[in-house]
Length: 211
Image (cartoon, rainbow, N blue to C red):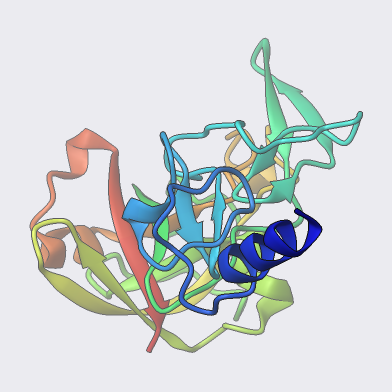
């Protein structure tokens, strides 16, 4: 019996191509279909979908909520509501899921202070973006291009010029807006237009990658 159990263990858990079963949290996966429920495959493991805000795999233990395996560091009360704060963002892959929002990068616009990367305001007719704090990564992507692809198949190259602050907010520097979610690509009008989106909708699911 012991030999039979060992044989079963080796055949199921040690087979490199094992992906036939539907996996739960942190289970092995190769495609989106390998994960059960609303989980998605991130870096070979099933995890919460940051777009849906699911917390199936969260194990808070007092550590706050988790989006895409990224735990919040606290909450900020703003306009009578509580918003989670994040230093991190979901892992970056060749097709990172994100929520596209719209930002006015010009002086007096919804972005508040000048862009973090260069201390300047920008023309919204340029394809530019701000990234959530974790993806902004202390400015390491400043001036770099990312490729954003919409569900309609259209894509655009955009330059990173700013941070969409996932920690601070509700002050003049942030145009009195709450902290950004940790999975946001905040695009100019040019980005929205290139993707064929209606700016008035406010949010659209996209995928992005470093160009």
